[in-house]
Length: 434
Ligand code: URA
Image (cartoon, rainbow, N blue to C red):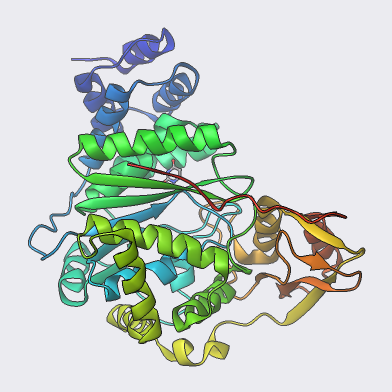
């Protein structure tokens, strides 16, 4: 029999925890025998002393096995899940999932809510009135079987160890550690029962990972975990220094996603969608090369099947599809407040973190997990990095339900920097790791 205090001491002295010790710790914490204060000490010891790959794999599998592990094997085809490590303006899933499902990839997706300056797919889907984001395991299974697509929130008993540990990390300064992030994300993905996983690891001011080196480490770590668990896993590292697309907020991102499915998506969003979509289609074997995948994506956008797949997803989960044809029915903010450029120049920076924080402060995001969000508010960007602006041009709009918006406007203004010379854009996709 182990004692948690001994394991904390061992980790504090840079020791390697065995699989049995990790299983003891995770199951003890999940069933309430190990208290928060001991788990907090362990998490902090991990932050300082790290974990090797064996420990990270054992931790992930123990968290995966702490609750239900879905068995999707009876559903035909290679089921692929997709996960993003979070971003600003990241409505990728809303566009990508209907596209790949329309191309024949069965998608069983678990999504999260937005936290801090980052958005979440579940909040966005709730813009469709009545949309059910809490499918039971059985409903989830049946829907993927019937429609080849389902998106649900983290259900009651999937990876409960991670649910409790994440809440503890949130209040103990132990979120930002690669071993803990990788095991947290992958435990949920593995519990959701898919056959293969595509990860979008974002890097930049608006992301968890601030440097390319850190993003690569996280990507390698998650790919290794996936492979150790017998799931093909690919990670795409994408830029998150600037918000993705032109909108940041829930309803306005949904409208942008609908436009994208109608063939009018912004270039950066579509590049991420095509890259991730290609990887999902290759893993599920519905395309045999990148060119084939891209062609199939073009087709389902052009012939309307991707948009119809979104409608099917929304109505299958009891949502109203009115907004798909009439986006003006989405929640709308009372005020549309323009931000004007104070000088001529090329946009050199449009800081994702700052824009994300403005959207959060308008009410579009959560400071803590229990906050409710205002689906209508956010920011529309009219200019992006590299664009030339003249003094007086509109750089962005606030979608606000506040009567007084000067403070928010000046915060948003600080997101932008300008240059007198043309600006080279950084590549959007840095690397693909498999
Ligand atoms: N998302 C997760 O699910 N877990 C983390 O630790 C960080 C981001």
